[in-house]
Length: 198
Image 1 (tube, rainbow, N blue to C red):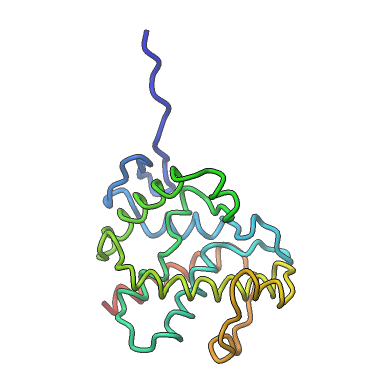
Image 2: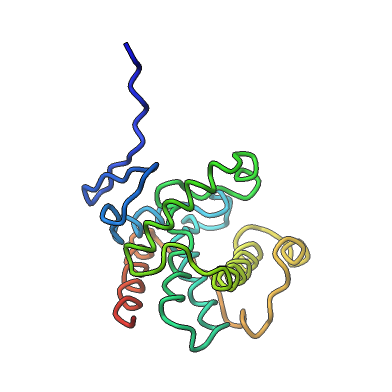
């Protein structure tokens, strides 16, 4: 008797069943993304404070930095910045050394999920490379801030790994650790505001 293939879907709190190998936009809900990301810890949870610094909080920061760097950028690219790590609501946040060890399978899974998420919210399945590059710059600035304010890196170490950000961009950006429910609410509110502005 043939062995049944392993289950490749996850049931979401919304009741949706998301097929990880063949995700479709109709099985994606922003509430599921916000909830999942609010409970996924950046830095494998190795941050100071009483709450984990979540991927949802990080995503809000990346969108804010992207907007500061690119005033007047189309709202759709700000939405792409907010959703840049959205697949992690299902697959978690792996630090770069773990991604390298896992290999290309992780990236392929991430790409499939990202394409379905983008289509669900009116973005192109593949974000243009030049936009991804700009979002990645904002992501690195966010990583620098997180490293120095929360993860115990010295400025010298953070500069080495993430590059020294422009002082004008990071001025006044102070990171705060908040309960997941609060971050989840802010993430969904920001998503709704961006969709309404499209």
